Length: 255
Length: 187
Figure 1 (cartoon, helix red, strand yellow):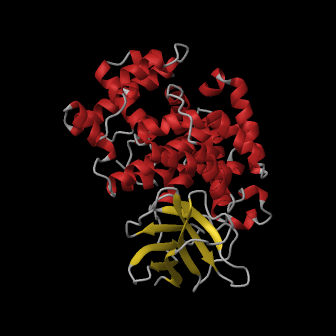
Figure 2 (tube, rainbow over the protein chains, first blue to last red):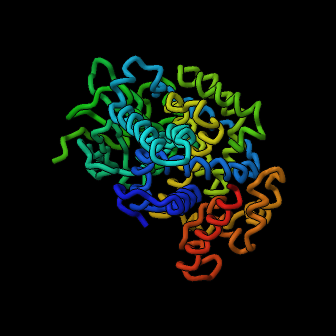
Figure 3 (cartoon, rainbow over the protein chains, first blue to last red):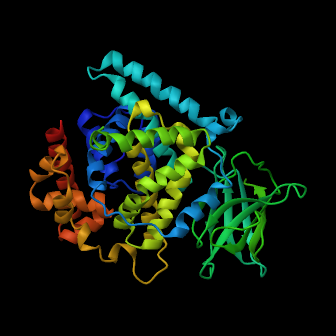
């Protein structure tokens, strides 16, 4: 289905692809290509937003299921390691890729408004939503070659997980082994770059699964230690590893 | 946007809360959580079937909402639609991921959906006030079901084909024709 991102889509093709995307029917490599296109194609972003807004009525029919009382605590534990991008003084330098992308779509709005009868206002209006949504895809799919890799080994030297770091600042953990997590416990991921500072929590997962790690402003370099420890479900109560080390390893430059 | 038309108070409250999240106010995030987490869990549960996975999707969604709140621009669309888009993307990627690396005995896709989630029940719950309902009603029942099964339960083209016992190509073209009809109807 994926036409070259350089070719303009006809209005009907654009709406159909956008509708399929919102229905969740675009998968795999097509999905990655679609989301890349979404970041630069304001008309496509507009089409996606229109479908989302129409289909929102269907989400409103979902039954309300009260979450377990643990859920908010787990979110809070994960947030402890995260600050919103805007609240940080270094936000401008922390996201070098995004501002460029946003400028790109504003430019293309303007361009379209000269050529197309349809006002570009709506398309521009939703570009922001879609930039964020496209970014979520980026969290899950390794679109680029990792810059650095750390293989985390168990005590018996079995590779339990890999940490990949990417040029745009993303860092992800991919488990290679099933890890037994007892009831009421979770896996916490830590990084240590300076013994004087001590380890910092960068993620909390209730079972082995691939997950983005939140390094935010923390330094990231070669020979940096990553480790997984077993902690209470809401994360380490002390902010430092308290449980047994499941696996650990240090980063090395990918060739 | 359609959502803000029915829920004006709640929608603007969410927009305001997102602005506060962007400046680091965790209480604002908690307010969104209190207002929306139960419905979000319902949406995630329809997609993921398993409660633990659904909670995981909601957890991830809130961390992402917190982290990217500054990217939400209230002048550019409803905050409510924005947070559900984040949730759905996260839930769908967990769903596809689980299917690839299935570890439990019952693949998620084969777990029985609740009757509450079947297309005609969803139709009956859709607000009469919504253009979407009238437009869906104009589609033949089986085509309407395909659209709803994809959106509500996250079925892929292949799973839809299996469900309705029709060739993949037929299902793909029916979905496209349904989308085209919906688009014309919705204007």
